[in-house]
Amino acid sequence: MRVSGRDGRAGQDVLRRVGEASVLILISLADGPKHGYALIQDIKELADVELGPGTLYGALDRLERLDLIESLPADDRRHPYRITAPGAAALRVHLDSLERVSAAGRLRLRLGGV
Amino acid sequence: MNGPGATRLVERALRCYPPRWRRRHGDEAAELAALLIRDGASAGSIALSYLVGAAREWLTPRLGPRLSTATGAVLIVACSLGVSAVLLASSAPARAALTPTPARGASASQAHGRVHCRAGSTDEGVPGVIRSMGQLPVMIWTAGHERSC
Image 1 (spheres, rainbow over the protein chains, first blue to last red):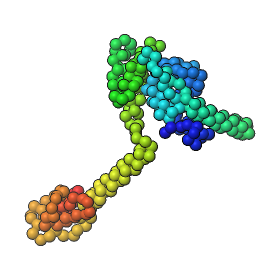
Image 2: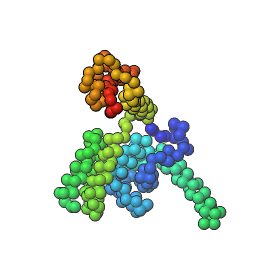
Image 3: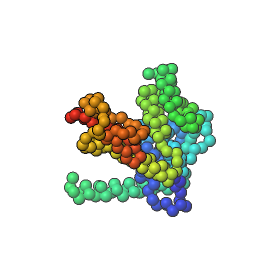
Image 4: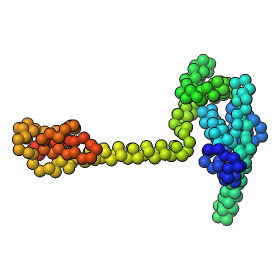
C-alpha cells in the first residue's frame, strides 16, 4: 500500500493501525535521517521505550513498503533512513488525531470530577 | 553472555530470517546486535527479538492486499469443506448404526464379533454400507449389542 498526498488518502490517519513502534520511528526520523542503532537510542530517550532490533526492522520494512520512509545509500554497513513527504504528512495527521483524543479525554476527566 | 557465544546466538537467530531479508539487513542487523550487547543488552533478548521478527517476516504475506484477501477466502472455503467432509464421515457410522438388521449370509464372526468399521473403495455386499457424496464408503458390521466406530 503506497500512501501519498496524490492518491486521495491525504487527511486520512494511515498510521492508526501500524503500531506504536512505527509511529515512534517516524517521530524519531522527523528531525533527520538515522540508522538503526541511532533510532533505538533516540526512541529510548524520547519515549522511554526500548525497541527490540527485530521489532525495529519489522517496522522499518513496513514503513518503507508504505512509502512513509526511504532508505538512503549505506554508510559503511548501516542504512540510514529518512522520512518521506507522505510520511511527514501522515505523522502530522496522526499526531493531530492523538491530540484531539487526548484533549477530549482530559476534558471528560475534568467534567467527571475524577 | 558476551563475546563469541553471544555473537553465535545472534547469528543463529538471524539465520532464521528469509534469505531476501538477510541479504538486505543481515550485516547491519549483526552490527546493531553487537552495539546493543556492548551497551549492556542481553544477547538472549536480542536473539529472541530477532527470532520473533523472523517468524513475523515468514508469516507476513508478500502478496498485494487484494490477492491476500482472495487467498485467505479460498483457504477458509477449503478448510470449511474439509471440516464438513470430516463431519459427514464421522456421522455416517452413526447413521449406519441405526440400520436395524444385518443381511442374511453374514458370517458368524461378523454376527457375533465386535463391530468393525473400515473404509473401502467398492460397494461390497455387506450391510450398512453407506456412500455419501464425495466420501469413501464406510462398511459397518453390526452384531450383538456392541457398537464401536
